[in-house]
Every structure is written in C-alpha cells, then in structure tokens.
Length: 291
Image (cartoon, rainbow, N blue to C red; front, side):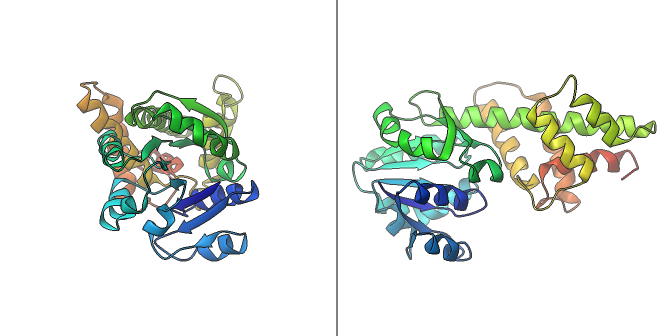
C-alpha cells in the first residue's frame, strides 16, 4: 500500500519502520529533518511538504497536539494534498472538538477521517504491540485494518463518530495519571515514616497492584529514571486539560482530573516538563520536604 506519514517523533519513527518492514511504500515528512535520514536509509521516501506526504492512498499522522495538527493540515495545507477517496488516519491524541472539526473538513473533500490514538510507549510502538483505539466510517476502518495489524497487537473500535476514540484515549490517560499520582502519594507517605520507596513499591506492585501501569511507573519512580521520557509530563498536562474540556462539554464532573492538572502544573513550574510524567513522584516528595 502507498502511504504517507506525517510526524516522525519518538512514536512516529518506529511506526514507520514497522510499516516499511511489512512491505509498504511510505512517503514521510517531519517539521524537523533529524529523523529523516535513518528512515530514508530504511526505505522511506522523504518529501518536501506535508501536502506531498498527504498525496497517498492512506495518510497517517502522529503529531503532538491540536496546534500541531492545525499548523500542518490547515496552515501548511496538508489537507489539500489529500485526494478524494483517500483515508487520513490521525493517531495523535487530540481534543474532542478538533476531532469533530477535522472529520467535517475531510468530509467536504471526500476524504475519510479515522481517529486512531494509541496506548503504549516508545518500546511498545517499536515492537508493533500498540493498542489502537479507533473510530470512523466502517468502510475506512476496514481498509486500514491491515495497517493496524502491523502497528498494534489489538484494535479497539468505538463507533463511527471521529471523536469517540479520542474520548476513550483521554479517559484511559486520566486513569494512568491517577495511577501515577496515587503511587507517588502513597510511596511518599511510606517514605515519611522511614520505609524506602523501593520496598513499598515492590510490595504493592507484587500484590494488590500487580499490573503493568503500577509496575512500570513504580520502577521509574524508584530508579528516578525520568529521562529520556517515554511520555513527557507536558504531554500529560495537555491530555488532562483535554479530558477536563471534554468533561465540561458533556457536563461530566471530573474533580480528580483538576487535582492532577494542578500537580502537573507544579511539575511544569519546577522544570519537569520534558521529564517522564512518572516524575509526579518528585512533586509529591518535594511537597513533603524530601527528595
């Protein structure tokens, strides 16, 4: 299949490599040229504009936020590169409002728009084991399912409205952030009484919370391994804000999301924006007067 791919960051680049290994032809574009050389050596074709990348049977985008999507697809006119009958698979985590807007703009041009945000960090993307949350027209989803089979371990459909997969992803990230925060606070309480964070987290993630999210983030907290970030704290703040925005639009109160937002802002104020969001443990420890 002839593909375009826009956004070659820590998640996008390994996804392109997997598509190339599966035999697909991939045209790639990125705002910064740094990731291009390795992908070209692997068989990708670099193009000079997002509109040229979009001129494909299927375009996949993996960009950081709403502003990046607007900049590339509206300001840089990537939307105009999409041919009628093509499919745009947006794997970025974006707002509910933007998903609705993008679906409408694509429909005007006869292009199918599929929301497909993912669950999984960089190592999971590289292994092709992402969980892919999807929503969009049924015929378009069927066309791109072979691509999802390359990129992920399972595809989770949530309906035909573009925003539904975004809601599912934001809801999932809210739960992940809550798990990180609860682990941070509980282990800081234990530390306040002289119990080592490592001993407490080892116990709790081997018994009541023996699941990947607690085990993985708990280990990062114990090791203070916050860089390079698997998922930046700044992106966590972005997603929690989007969850709050979605909650307000649907009149769904999310009181704990407000707590998470403030704690993430605390981390941002102390220069932790580029650290993994597991560094919420540092926010908790700092408030307790300990590091």
